[in-house]
Length: 346
Ligand code: UT7
Image (cartoon, rainbow, N blue to C red; front, side, top):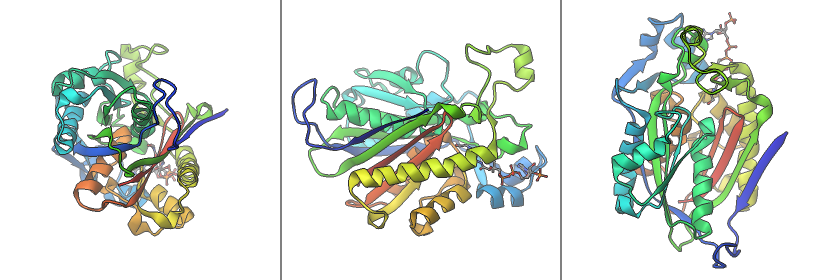
């Protein structure tokens, strides 16, 4: 069964405060990737693959690997500090802290609580969002709703992953795809027209079996046997995921455009989930937008799941690729299935 929630900025009243709903802006972004690089050539010495196969099938050339002892929350905190610095706020002003991740430090407490301690966001309520690769845009949507309805003022949203901790390094079908990293954004009401203008999130639980990690949860707790069977690693039906990704991202992009009353010609930059260059090109083609408007960094980082669009947004921001007044479309897809799209006026 398909389930989708769609929100659009409208001049409505907040049910909690009876005040006019507020517009929400991103006032700072940050990102962090680990120093260690694993190239396609390195991988070809680990499994039966080649730089040529990985490059032509995915567009990925290299990915980053977290250092020993470097946790998801460490990377998240590093990205968060940069976003906070750019936003010119104190961590104490953050009243809600969301971490989107499929690779939390622990099943509980929330990775967001570890980040809170590391960055000194002592006044924040903290929780994790589990929506796989779509998690950062799900978190952005939640942040926007809390700010819009006056329950919170300053929200730190982070996408962070240590995917290499759940990678099956003997499975060439999947191990060449993933990497580690984190991206962050500070959201706040700013009273200007700039900001989040359209969002769409959705899920389809029919496809929980095409991209998942069977072990490590309550259904299949970790045992020596389960570990030997690689159950606590990513399991993926690549071709099926590919097919669903193109359809879901295309539909999500169209929904966000419709709600914003914009056409694809209005968009200055598309920041898509960074999973596969062929998926990105297929979406550009079907949306009717030139490929040079698609932001791509997967050649350097591979697929970092919930961190991917967060890192890309920060790079697009800091490099000047997106400029004030630009319409930016972000569109993602992940296990669940989950999908989401957001249009920002930068
Ligand atoms: O965030 C979402 C996460 N996941 C995704 O987005 C994944 C979406 N899917 C994909 O990106 C693509 O399906 C893959 C990159 C995973 C695979 O590309 P493909 O074009 O669908 O290849 P395939 O699975 O059909 O495999 C083609 C061949 C097979 O060999 P045979 O059976 O034709 O002899 C595979 O065994 O390529 C082989 N193969 C490899 N060869 C060298 C699969 N992986 C590799 C590899 N190196 N790493």
